[in-house]
Length: 254
Image (cartoon, rainbow, N blue to C red; front, side, top):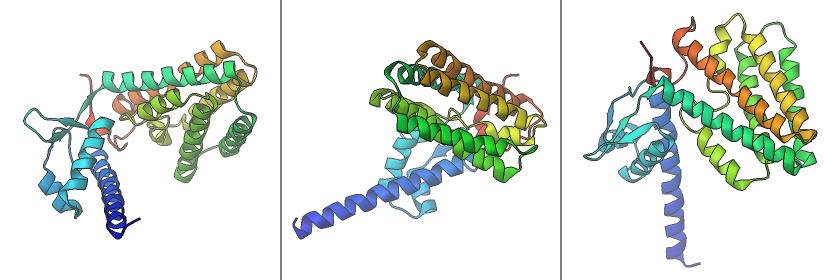
């Protein structure tokens, strides 16, 4: 490789890294409410705020539009999106539908034994957490990590690159990830009970996959997503404080 080519490659890699950093920081600002819904995003201002050039900022803005957090304006530029409750509910429904398909494929095709063992071990760690009569913030954080790991293993079990790609896109939709509203439960008296129900569904889905019961696995996984829809309603209309990251972007029904 020539010195010129090496320099070009290094420059491209650096630019990509800066774009990712800008994307992550902008996402944090939006979900924290520091860039409110409807706010117009100016490349120059964001570039100065983040201390990076406009090229990685432009790339970051395009990626955040693809994620759904920004919308392109007719005259150029972007604005922070807001979402109706139906938007968020539909995103959760889409994720549940795709997860149901993944579970059915895993059951019908036969999930790899090594992945099944990893999933069982993951559920055993969640069981250990739920043996406590009450969960503190650290335990909830641990649950979120394990919950996301289990869902990722489910996607792997499907044996479908296409379905996994679509699920990766779906869970990146605003508020559609499997743990998006779990934090809402932290201040709820029924917090542990709700997670116990979710864990029982995890176990039943895995049992159905191992038993090669495709229709049952799919039905259970779609039902599982309804917990997230229930948590959405609690986040917007229940007694929980509305400190969940990004919840201020959701337009509540009157």
